[in-house]
Amino acid sequence: MSLKVLGISASPRADGNSDLLLKQALAGAQSANAQTEYVRLADLNIAPCVECNACYKTGKCRVDDDYQLISAKMLEADRLIFATPVFFMTVCAQAKLLIDRCQCLWAHKYVLKKPLVETAGRDRRAMAIAVGGSKSKKMFDSIRMTMKYYFDVLDMHYTANLFVNKMEDPAQIKKHPTAMKEALRLGAELIIAPKPPEKTIDVELT
Ligand SMILES: Cc1cc2nc3c(=O)[nH]c(=O)nc-3n(C[C@H](O)[C@H](O)[C@H](O)COP(=O)(O)O)c2cc1C
Image 1 (cartoon, rainbow, N blue to C red):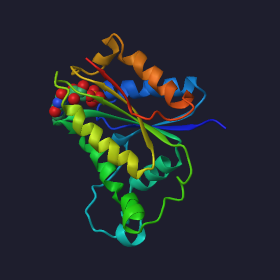
Image 2 (image 1 turned 180 degrees about the horizontal axis):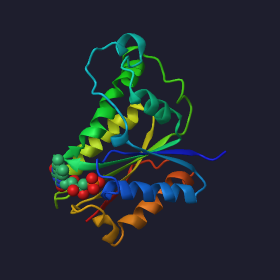
Image 3 (image 1 turned 90 degrees about the vertical axis):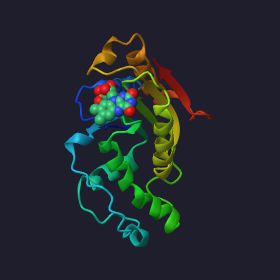
């Protein structure tokens, strides 16, 4: 059975820098015989978490929108590749909407103290892709922290980062000397590696 890889693209720019890297990472996973699915958050309708805390009793989000659909996909996947641009030093709004709605999974695990049945005993791994326009690399600190808690709530091992700075124009990433190759390589590695690395693999490119 081939592994299922879900690619989530958070950028509002279709074929923008992070989106292109994600597609390349998915191609890498495919080259290693994984089954891939690509989802663009800009195509979905995901409302913000309103902290109603209904999930503290049920472990589920009571808001019936596209979060329900993508939540099922995230829980089913063997691998997740999450791509975001850096907006104001952190993930973009589309990414944050989805991540905040995962509060119901957090409540399920840590308030109700029930394991997620869908993920129990599985080897699930996740990789983050982020692209920023400035030369600063500090912006990736906040991405790292948010991804750590997001992947943790999904019971996914935080396997790798691909971070690229100094990319502003759409599709500028195609001209980067190594970024697209690294995305392909890391996407394949996410499937091929027999076990997750002890330490998150960090690829930061300028
Ligand atoms: C609202 C907004 C906020 C941004 N904030 C930052 C920032 O804090 N740091 C940075 O380096 N680039 C920032 N950028 C630039 C984007 O990260 C950059 O253009 C990136 O290549 C976008 O990735 P994408 O093509 O995948 O959407 C910002 C752009 C926008 C539109």
